Length: 363
Ligand code: NAD
Ligand code: ZN
Image (cartoon, rainbow, N blue to C red; front, side):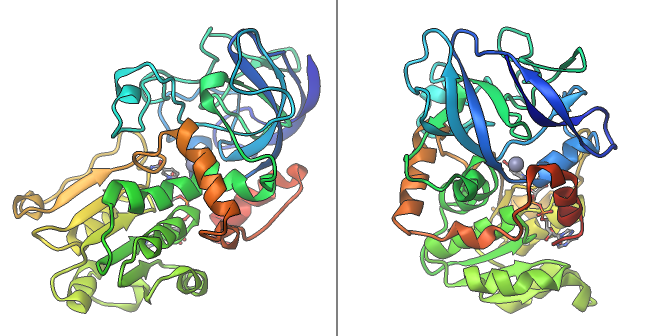
C-alpha cells in the first residue's frame, strides 16, 4: 500500500480536499501509476457540479494525466515498471463489438455503458480516513498514485515530457480528433468552432491541420481570441457584439453557412446555434460539449430535413485510444503540432482548487 496525496471530492458542490490517501497494490490485470502531471478539463467541473451521470462520491476526479508505471498486477504484459504512460478515461478493451469495429472508438467498458466508479472487480484501491473512495472513469489522475485496468493504459515514448503530453488524455485528443476523425474536415473548407477552451482550441488546431481555408472562432470571452488566431483561426467573433443571432452572422459571413461547425461549450443554445451555422445541405455539426445529464434540446426539424448532419463525438471520434495516443505523442515529438500552446498555467498539486477557479474564470 502506498500513502500519498490526492484531491478528494467528498461531496458535489464542495472544493476538493487534498488529503493523505492509501492506494492499494494493483490486482491481476491492473497497473499502478505514479501520476506526474494532470490537466483540468471542464468535464471534471461538470462532475463536481453533479451533472455527469452515475458518479459516486466521495471520488478522486481528474482524467487528463500522464505518469510512470510503478507496479503491475499478475498477467499484465503491455507495460512494465518505469514505462511512461497515459491513463485512458476511454478504455480500449479490444474485445467488445465496438472495439472490434475499426471505425469506432467507443468501448463498451466506458462509463456511459458501465459506471467506472469502482475497478472492474467492483472494489476500490483508494481509501482515506478509513473510508472507501471511488475511482473516476477508472483513471482518477488527481492523485499522486492511481490504479487502472491494463486496457485503459497507453504506453508512450520514454522521451515524452509528461507535463505537456498529459493533455492527450482528454482535451487535445478530443478537439483535434473531432475535426480530423469525426468531421473529417476537407482542405479548403470553412469551419466554425464555438467555445475556445482547451477542447475548442484543439478543434481549431485540427481544422487547421486538415487544411481548412477559413476557421471562425466563437467565444463570449475575447481574451481567448489571440490564442485562437495563433493556432489557426482566421476570424474571431463574440456573439455579444451582435444584435442578431450568431448563426445569422456566420451565415452572412460565409454565404450559406460553414461546411463544419463544432460546439465545445456544453449549452443548449450554442448547440442549436452551431447546428444552424453549418450549411443547410451538406453542413456537418459536431457536438463536443457536455450538457447537464437529463437535459433535452428541442430543434426545428427542418434544420436537418434539408440535409445537415448532427453528430456527437467522444475523445476524438475514431482514435482507438491504446493505439492512437502513442501515435499522437510521436507526432507531437516530431513537432507536427504544438499543443504546448494550450497550456496557460502550471500549478503545484496542492493548488488544484486554484486551477478550478482559473478554469471557471475563463483564464
Ligand atoms: P472550457 O471551460 O475551458 O472552455 C469553454 C469555453 O466556452 C470558454 O472559453 C467560455 O468562454 C466559452 N463559452 C461559454 N459560454 C459561451 C457562449 N454562450 N458562447 C460562446 N462561448 C461560450 O471547457 P473545456 O475544458 O474546453 O471543455 C469544453 C466542453 O467540452 C465541456 O462541456 C466539456 O465537458 C466537454 N468535453 C467533451 C469531451 C468529449 O469527449 N465529448 C471531452 C472533453 C470535454
Ligand atoms: Zn475531459
